[in-house]
Amino acid sequence: AEAREAYVAARPASRALHERARQVMPGGNTRTVLVYSPFPTAMESGEGCYLRDIDGRDYLDLCGEYTAGLFGHSEKRIHDAVRAALGRGINLAAVGEAETSLASLVCGRFPSVELVRFTNSGTEANLMALTAARAFTGRDTVMAFRGGYHGGVLLFPLSGTNPATVPFPFVMADYNDIEGAVSVIRENADRLAAVIVEPMLGSGGCIPARLEFLAALRKATAEVGAVLIFDEVMTSRMSGGGLQQRLGVTPDMTTLGKYMAGGMSFGAFGGRGEIMGLFDGRIAHAGTFNNNVLSMAAGNVALGKIFTAEAAETLFDRGEAMRARLNDILARAGTVMHFTGIGSMATAQFRAGPIERPAPPTPEEEALRELFFFDMLASGIYLAKRGMIALSLPVGEAELDRLAAAVADFAEARAGLL
Ligand code: PLP
Image (cartoon, rainbow, N blue to C red; front, side, top):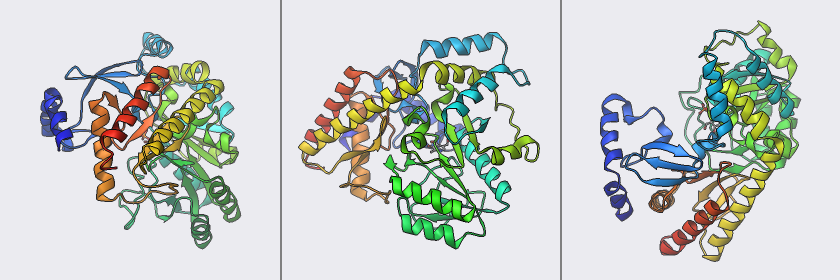
């Protein structure tokens, strides 16, 4: 309650904005993920890996726009590319050079992507990949994992019945449960078009898939003729060719998004030539902004010049070191709190590990997660409210030191609760 009161007192402008927003948007927003009680902090501007809110408070940005903010807020080469594209005119209703060169970059990097198409978001990329798989196999059902998130309408719950938002018939299994997943695949062999899986659960809590789990999915889908789709919308940052390249498991299709257009809106889906070939006219895929000039221009610089395969390795190593350091601090403080994740992504967990799959949080866990979020905000560090960190390229040693100190302070100040 104290942390919450201090939060409210420090943010009169954010509070007033939320009141206005609620008059015109249900819940006062158009992105559910950004909103929390009593009202969300509204940001005014960003530079490098720092943010300023509309009350004039500054934050170290470790939310990294839920992985889409890989380049930070003011990467000069991205800004220059976007300005240059604007100078040539906003969307030209035509194919163009930048679209083909960005497609070449993506196909050249991801082992599973022979052909690719662009969308505006990861959600659309997944909807199109699933549509392609259904058309290719002539089957209707999709399999996903409990706690998986594949976009606005493609959220798979931890418990309970199938959500009404998913626009296909689907079946579910538990993440990292090899036996359970393989039997669901075999039981549904005749109607199963695709299995869609994040090689690390992102919004489900940065929980990595075991290699044997992904290998078992690869084998079982091949046996029944279902399309294996890796949703690498978040995890593609884990190496030049995504987490699939790092792990050495190649799906039939891959979906991409987030940072790949330098922070402009973006999504992509691609895969084996015989599946993607359906889009030569047999399946339509239009979309006014699919090849929008800002995303295409920024994407070429982002992937081609800045986030090279070498840069991806460096960021991965920095993230691994960060998580090891934070977990060492927490272990020495004697708490079960720890961070899961791979490379430059991490999520705070308030239960003992190892964690193989997400579980509904207990009220205590929920309260600790909230307290951690508000305590970090109070010390000037902005995380995703679920306790997720996504490092961006401008985050340096000084910033990581600051994070480590804040986590150490939290463990000490809240020792009685942890
Ligand atoms: N897939 C994964 C794994 C994601 O994490 C997200 C977004 O967080 C999406 C798909 C949806 O992407 P978008 O928000 O661009 O629609």
